[in-house]
Structure formats: structure tokens, C-alpha cells
Amino acid sequence: MRGTLLAIGFLAVATATKNPNCTDGLYMIVARGTGEPAAASKDGLYPENSGSPGYLAQLIAAQIKDSSIMGVEYAATLNDYVQSENDGANVMLQLANEYHSSCPGSKMALLGYSQGAQLVSDVLCGGAGGDFNHNAPLSPDVVKNSGQCLLFFRESAQADLDLVIAAVLFGDPTHIANTTYDRGTSVHNGIFSRTNNTVCKKYTDRMTSWCDKGDRFCDAGHVDAVHGLYLQRYNSTMVQYVVERWQNLTAFSATATVTSTSSRSSGGSTSTKTASPTNSESSRPSTGIASGLTLPGWPLVLLSCGIFFI
Ligand SMILES: *[C@@H]1O[C@H](CO)[C@@H](O)[C@H](O)[C@H]1NC(C)=O
Ligand SMILES: *[C@@H]1O[C@H](CO)[C@@H](O)[C@H](O)[C@H]1NC(C)=O
Ligand SMILES: *[C@@H]1O[C@H](CO)[C@@H](O)[C@H](O)[C@H]1NC(C)=O
Ligand SMILES: *[C@@H]1O[C@H](CO)[C@@H](O)[C@H](O)[C@H]1NC(C)=O
Ligand SMILES: *[C@@H]1O[C@H](CO)[C@@H](O)[C@H](O)[C@H]1NC(C)=O
Image (cartoon, rainbow, N blue to C red):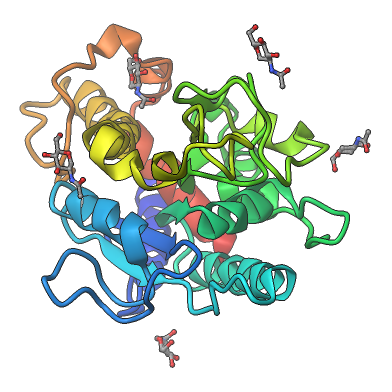
């Protein structure tokens, strides 16, 4: 019975990962800011359609094996900002949904600067409304899959499968001051501050919105330079955030696997790339899952989700 389950599971995962468009690492969907060129940077700083957040994406990709970067193709213009923003948000939403359906269980991150940050917030939290996009937010199942796994394994109550593991916004004109996911020195709302952040607040564990005081757009301030200083000021912190999210969430699988296989001989078979040394087992909420099962806990949870997806 166990054997059969496992076999079905491995088959499911094998099938799910066969799509060459799916990456084992992090899939980053990146939206450039207003006026940033769509062409890749000649000096290799950022890839096509990605602008300055593409710079972050490349730094992240250097630390997370097999990652890939997908720039959002949109006008990123000020001429018809509302149209540009609406179109961009829809493209980004579609990219996330497509990746999720072609590559179930794969992890994504959303990065955006300025207008591109507004795209990210629309995708994650739903359109800001008013003149702007009224799009529904990314389905919660695409951000964080939990329910489906529970159907198979009640023990895995905490074994959520995080899909959109991180969002990094900087200079977002829809910024709301003093939220739990805010970063930087701003205490003012942006020029197009969203009125409803009910959905954003659900993603405080995976969303960071950087805004500094004086920024004309996210802080409704009066200091021109500030809007262009985020990379200089925070690039390593932003990169670190995403990499740490990845490590925390993938370290779980290493921990779970090691825990559950330790009763046999060694736990050396895991191919998980990143087991963060900063995470002690006791800090993982989920070790109990693995030890509660006699089979390798995490792979099974993953596989059961894999089965369900297909
Ligand atoms: C991979 O992506 C390309 C380009 O988007 C698409 O045409 C192709 O159908 C995809 N392949 C699979 C197997 O999904
Ligand atoms: C945010 O908090 C600061 C400090 O408490 C306060 O001065 C500021 O008015 C708040 N901003 C908004 C938009 O509520
Ligand atoms: C804010 O958005 C949430 C989620 O879409 C919705 O349930 C709620 O009614 C909205 N609140 C207001 C005041 O519009
Ligand atoms: C990124 O941050 C480092 C310092 O941590 C800095 O030297 C570098 O210039 C920054 N990159 C950009 C593009 O600002
Ligand atoms: C990673 O996990 C550690 C330990 O639980 C936690 O303190 C830290 O905030 C997490 N990092 C991120 C970026 O979520």
C-alpha cells in the first residue's frame, strides 16, 4: 500500500516536473518601473523587460540554483499610466497563473519597482480600484496551497505548500503607510494609495513594500532623488529577504526528510539544495509531521499535492 502510494506519488511528481518550462529553483516575475527600458541592460545588470528589479532578480538567481527570470512585457509608460498599469497587471497575473498551472508546486516570487510595484500589489492584493485596475487578486491557492494537502494527510496541517514565496515592491505609488509589510522610512501614503489592503495584510509573511520618506510617488514627498535610491540603499537586504524565504521554506523539506529517514541510516539522500544553517529543527513548526509518519514526511506531502494537482 505504502509502496503503491509512493509509486503513484513519484509518478505524479515526475509528470509534473517534465515540463521544460518549469524550473526547480525560483521563478521570478519581474515588472520594471515607469520609463525603464524594456531591452536588457548592455552591461548585463538586468535581463529583458525587467529593469531595476531585474537587477535584484539576477542577484537572487545567483544564490538560488536553477532560478529563472521572467520580465513582464508592458508599456511601463507615464503617457497613459492607467492603461499601461492595467495592462501590465493583467499580463503579470496571467504569467503567474500560467506558471502555476504548468508547473504545479513550483515556487515563484514577484518583484516590481514603481509602476511595476503597483503591478505586483494589484496581482497579490487585487486592483487598487477607482480609475485603476479592478482585477481580482491572485487566487489564494496560487499563493499558498494548503487545503488540498490536508485532504490527503491530516497530519500535514502545517505543511502549507508556499507557491508565491516572496514579493518585493519598491516605490509603489499605491503604498499605504504603517502597514506590517512596509519597509523603509516613509510614514506617508503614496499618491495613488490603495484604499483597501485587506488581502495584502494576509501576505505579511511574504510581502515587503519599500518606501522612503521624500519619495514623490510612494510617499507623496518632494525629494526627486529618493525614488531612484532603493537599489543603492537596500539591494542586499531585499535579496537577502527573498533568499531567506526560499531557504526557510526549502530547509523544511531537508529537515523533514532527515528527521524521517534518520531512523534508517543516514539522511543523505535529500537533494534539497539549501538547508539554512540558521534554522534549528526546533524552530520549524513542521518537524512533527515528518516524525509522525513512518514514511518520509515531506516528500509524501509534496507528492500528495502533486497527485491532487493532476
Ligand atoms: C513552454 O513555453 C512556451 C513559450 O511560452 C510554450 O509555447 C510551450 O507550449 C510551453 N511548453 C509546455 C510544455 O508547456
Ligand atoms: C504613520 O505613523 C506615523 C508615526 O506614528 C504617523 O506620524 C503618520 O501620520 C502615520 N501615517 C499615516 C498615513 O497614517
Ligand atoms: C476590502 O477588500 C476585501 C477583500 O476583497 C473585502 O472583503 C472588503 O469588503 C473590502 N472592504 C471595503 C471597506 O471595501
Ligand atoms: C547594491 O548594494 C551594494 C552594497 O550592499 C552597493 O555596493 C551596490 O552599488 C548596490 N547596487 C546598486 C545597483 O545600487
Ligand atoms: C526565516 O526563518 C527564521 C527562523 O524562523 C525567521 O526568524 C526569519 O524571519 C525567516 N526569514 C524570513 C525572510 O521570513
